[in-house]
Image (cartoon, rainbow, N blue to C red):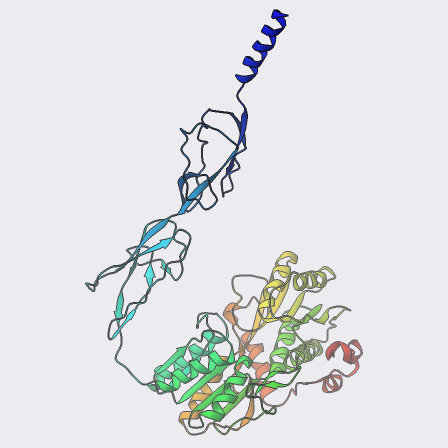
Length: 508
């Protein structure tokens, strides 16, 4: 009996000596996962290794979610415990230094990853140049994610004396170096201004929204502009507003006509009134002869030895349709001159309703080249670059329209160019000679030298400037009357018209 009692007593002693285990959990508030551990009672927790967290400093472990009670790792474990990590967002010192003008630096604290405030200092009769990330002022920044202590540098340039301008050009937010419409127009204005001692300036709006375009024009007017030049159909609403509110200012709207409609589906207007399509008495509205441009493209293609032709127009608006009609007419006219046959196969005359690069546009061009087309005339504007790629892959040719901004490729046969430079030069000449026609829509083409080709950026095999000049003479003298719609095209083509259905030429 005594032995049994002794055994029971020993078991109770041994059981009482076994420590209970507790769960220690870690909440990291980061991408790092630290697994829970089991710790025997009255033992200490070993502090786990903590990985860096971008933008934050490690501040320790806490026993509550509000991170107010820190945990002492010398503590003996007595129960299940959750430990919460505390991170403190790093603040970086950002210093803005103005060079050369003895101005005090500007200093601020910016949270890691945030954008600096980039203050705009002012100095009378000077313009601030902006902030740069290096002392040699070569890398301009407008926003910059702060991830370290950093210094930005800026300075001022002295303003030119205030001088009222004569001619204002309203461009897009990208400015005049777009190798297209804005640059072409600006070059024409510059040439006229230099030759006629006029002061001209271009204005960049915040966006191409009508309100921003109007604001840019109002600034130009406040600086003395007598003439406002607006290039392209995106400025039609702006022209309508300006001609109504500033009758003393002359408006030159290139390749567009003033109106107040902002949504042709609903016929909503900029002023909430009835739709109006009016060219004011102070407005010159001008368009280019797309039929002549297209005729040149077709004539050049066949004259240079190509007989299997294709056409890819952009959205089938009237101007794009006229391009295609002229192209067909010019191609068959050249073929008749040479007494040769030319081909437009099924599926090689179409419209792709875009004016930008797309894989679909490139695929359609590649299909045309795969069935034997030798040259494609495309009026898809920036989409022409998709056709260029297809032509490069197929060792074929393409003809671009409107702007001479595709260079450095043998695939480009030529570009038929809308000469915004020549047109604006001619209109300004008429304005300052009191001969400008306003209150009406005018159309300009070869006779006015408003359209042309650039031989320097063409890749002809046999087409020459002599052939080009002969073609221009025939058109401007009336020997060639270019069709502008399907019915006149049918008459022009005669028996060749069987190749073209109205639905193909003039799709709904």
